Image 1 (cartoon, helix red, strand yellow):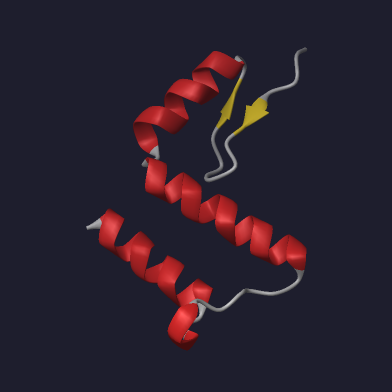
Image 2: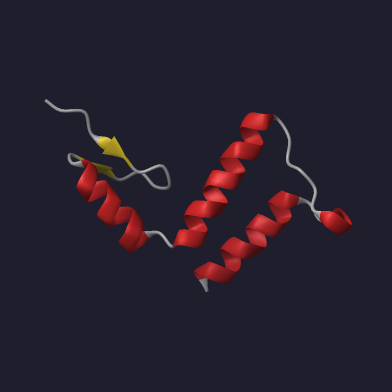
Length: 70
């Protein structure tokens, strides 16, 4: 049996990498993927950096997600 490709944003799994790619392009907006990657990078760095003006990055990302989900 082959290893399945797991979507990093949801519980879906795919037998083919191409199927995962189509899923990501169709089901997940590009901004959602960017937000997920930034969150992951921040967690791996051990902290969430602040933006200019003192806004917490995680709060800004949550606002971005809410705006793209609407």
